[in-house]
Image 1 (tube, rainbow, N blue to C red):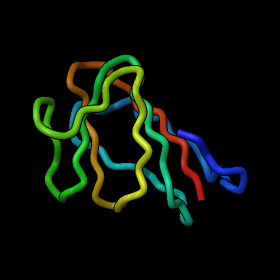
Image 2 (image 1 turned 60 degrees about the vertical axis):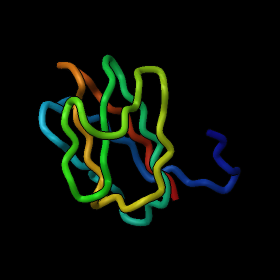
Image 3 (image 1 turned 30 degrees about the horizontal axis):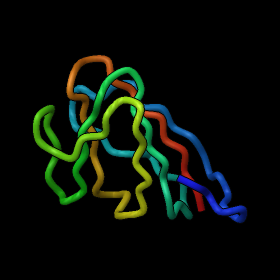
Amino acid sequence: MGLKSTTICLGYQQITSLSSATGLTVPQGTTLALIVPETNNVRWRDDGTAPTASVGMPIYLGASLSYDGDFNRIKFIETTASAKLNISYYA
């Protein structure tokens, strides 16, 4: 993902507890989030239904998701124990 030169970082979050479907804590003004799993794969959904360890869109360890959808609806869950998510928020 290439960020344009006028992109402003609004914050960072690390989620370390993903054993149940977990949402984001998004700073006001966010238009884009860069989401990177650490340790294990995760799954996500943003259709109003919680993901499970076997159902949802996967983000594999070493990959990233650039997300600019509805931040209030997206939720994540680990596919195996001890997954973490690193998120940077941008305007």
